[in-house]
Length: 278
Image (cartoon, helix red, strand yellow):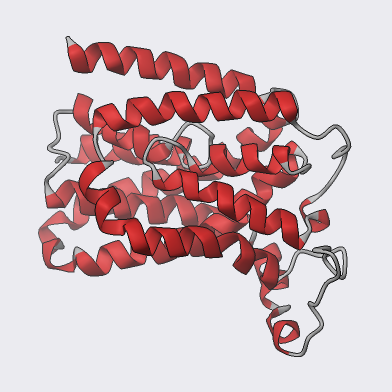
């Protein structure tokens, strides 16, 4: 890998991490086009590092919201976050929403981590997941609740948060897309486009820090100071591009249905299917 390849990969990660088009899928397919060895430990570790750059962008953009959520941690232990019938006791997103949304993917991810790494990280499996994820997005847009209206992220209930977490498990299949699966799930559960997207961004931070942290620990032996230059270049590129991509995506969601992103996924799947089978 060289600096140019690192910057290109960082840009792709920043653009796609929070769009419902699958950043992992794009990274795998981009590395294929760049002639990088997807099985090389250096490439795998690099992909982990640039993901952290994209996650950092969410922390910077939503730092006030994160502080607000962290301030509710004491309430988790003194019983103030109890609810009836799955409804949040107050119109305010709190730490329990985040825990409920994280739990399913954390449990399933820990159980299937080695299987996923061994069998699902490949160009052709990503092509299949692009198609299946796109079909889910079309279905969700078609069957979405009509009463979400101007619902904000603070209106999400505990039941909805846990339901979104269940849908997030689909994103463990590379190419499916975390935002694609969770936003689709949110729509099916009666959450608005924007609220589902913002909730996805917020939940992604602890989930991705945990997942990438675990991968980095396992990949520590492959890290070298000789790699610092292109690791840093990819990290910075992913961070800067993600800052713009997140805001742009939220604005697009107010005007465009998920169908548009689903059609893009289908087109991408066709292109790479042709490239992989020629």
